[in-house]
Image 1 (cartoon, rainbow, N blue to C red):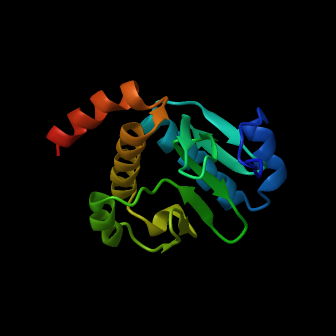
Image 2: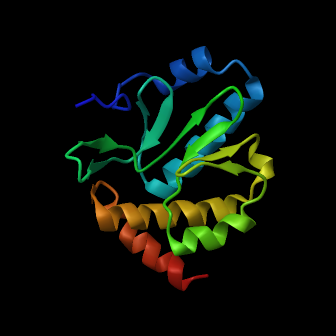
Length: 157
């Protein structure tokens, strides 16, 4: 079975951003995303693989037997766009997407050129929905911390 490439590396995030991200604006977006995702997950940012900044951790296991750990939410500051690993395909997330703003999407990634192109309140809702989904379907560092916050936010809309 193939080894998972996206594993926790322990690499310093500031060193990564200074060496990997050449565009100062992309670096600024990265620090803004770090602040937002850290607040929403109540988790410290950590490097996963060579270029992903992740928050929290969960364990997955597929029917094929492949299993591993992954960040609950994450992003990567790629040259062409910010790649956000924050989407779980739930009914609520599908309803929120049209209100997110200007983006492209693959199965589980959202690609944005700049933070000003999206509504960060909607991004927060998508992230919270993803945290909820992951905590319900996997062993997750987010299970206890965010279930209370999620319930409070659900009632305070």
